[in-house]
Amino acid sequence: MDILESRSWRSSTYFLTCLTVWISAGSWAKAEEPTGGLVSTSGTAEVRKFPSILRVQIELTTRGKDLKQALENAKTRKAEVLATLQKMKAEAIEFGEVAKAEETENSKQIEAMFRKKIRGGAEKGPKIAALYELVRTVRFEFPLKVDSIEDLLLKAEAIQADVAKAELGHVESTAKSPEEQEVEEEINMFVRQRGVQQESKPGDPKFLFISAISETERKKAVADAFTAAQEKAKFLASANRFELGPLSSIQSKEDNGDASNIVRGYGYAGYAQAERHAAMVKDHEVWNSRPAQVVFRVHIETTHRLIKK
Image (tube, rainbow, N blue to C red; front, top):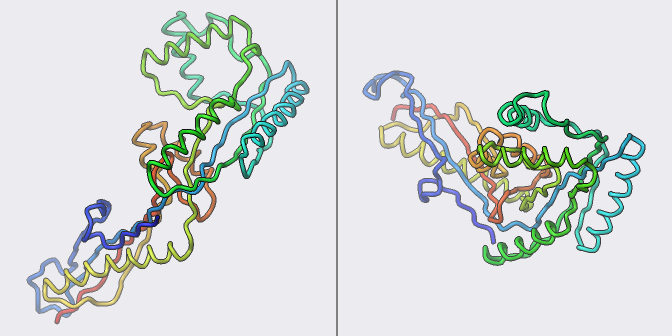
C-alpha cells in the first residue's frame, strides 16, 4: 500500500515544512521600488509503503590460540552458518571478508571504569581476551508480503525469533578462561547498574525493514514537494500585492531512512549505529529499523524574486 502525501499545508504530517520570508528591500511598505525583494518557501512530500524485505546482518566471531587455528575455525563457522541459513530458507546470503577483531573504544572505556571503581585500579584483576579473534559479517534477508501493520508485526516477530533461536552470532563460552568470564560478567553487571550505554554486542543481529523506491515514485515526490513550495510562494506574493518572479535558488534534501529516530533513542552512540544501519541499505531502497512503514521523504526549499504588480 502506497501513500503519497504531497501538499504540506493540507496535512498536519508535514511537520518538517518550514517557512521564511525575507524582503531584501527591508520593508513591505516600499512599493515604489521596482522589485519586492525575495520570498523563500519550502515544501515536503512523502512516499509511505510497507517493507517487502527483512534484512539481517550478524558479526561472526571465531577464536584460536594462533592465527592459523583462528582461520580454520572461521572457515568451519562459515560452513555451519551457511547450512543453518539455507535450512531457514534465507535469501541473498552474503559473507564478508574475514578480519582481525579490534576492541572498540567504548569497550575499553567501560573496562577501565570498571577496574577503577570496583577493582581499585587498572592493573588489578585478570586481563580479558587472551585468544586470537577474527570477525566477518554475514548478511541475509527474508521476503515480506504484508498489507497491514498487524500482518507485518506478526511476521517480523516470527522471523526475528527464529534468527535469535539459531544463535548465529554465538561465541563459544569455553574459549575464555573461567577468570576471564568472571570479569566479563562483573563488567556487564557494573554497566547495567550504572546505566552506561553500551554498543550492541558483535554477535547481536541487526534487523532492517526495507522496500525499494522506484524512480517514478521518487520523481513524483520531488515534483509534489516543489509544487507545495511554489503554491505557498504564490500565495505569499499575492497576499502582499506582488507577482512571483523568476526562481532565484532551489535546494533539495532526500531522506530514505529513520536515522533520526535511532539517534533520539540511543543518544550520541546512535550516530554510529545509524551509520551501520545505513551501510546495510542499497541504492533506491528505503529503510526502517522498526517493524513499521518505510518513509521516503523529499524536502525542497525555493527562493523567488518578487515583482511589483
